[in-house]
Image (cartoon, rainbow, N blue to C red):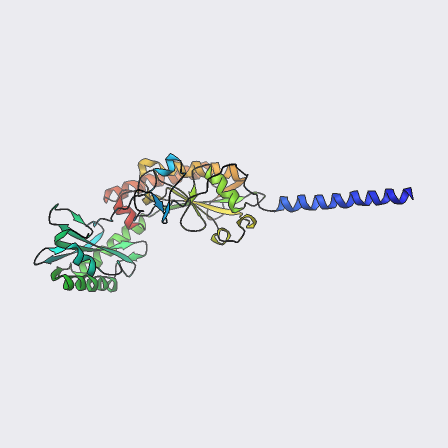
Length: 353
């Protein structure tokens, strides 16, 4: 009887050991989970765009911004109009016979502000201030100007897009009793092609890939690690952004991962083994030293996540590679400045978008 009891106890101990080992193995094989932090504040979306968000009270995606630390709060953008710029726009003048009220102009503005893949803008000359601005109720305008962007990352303005722009502006002019004066289509398209050729040759988006060395990461773990270095969730699922300190500016860096993992019913169970850290060079001023930030953040994140830093070909990124990229960027910055398209300027941000 004592032998039977001993064997039963031994079997129970062995079974318990198997269960514990299985649970430990399963936990080790699963994605790393974030540490529980008391009084943790929820992450807020904060990804400024050219349009920005409305000023005080600060809101992001229509939600009030609360509980953000000061460095993050200063990056909340205010809404600013995208100004017409003869450097990158084809501009048409719209001259009414008499001043037009802002209410009438707003009533007849085109419902969409794109001609194909190119944005266009209409501004009015305020009769009192003499400033060009987007039409507003309660103001009167003696003249309007409409502009279509000559090029962006979708390519150069073509004849079809220019014709669509002309049709929309002509309809607006007819509605407010004005006479439009358009630039020659062939000249505009030729300028667009030349500008597109320049921008295509001087565009740069740097990307570093972080690959897990052993255990995968959960979405929460990635957010927690990145959050320690200033990253916050972006508007688009699968993006964490390092905000700029300049109001209305695009993020300095973007940390991107599988958007399906971000949208999973249980993000804690979604395993991530690879993320990309990217720098959109023309979007941030050289003075902000975004390249240095890209290098430093890549190294810090690689250490925190136990990851290997590789390029888009899967080759490890060495210090020599970073130095070569830095030298090439200096030439790029000088070329952009030579065309009055310095990195981080509004014209550059619009052109390289």
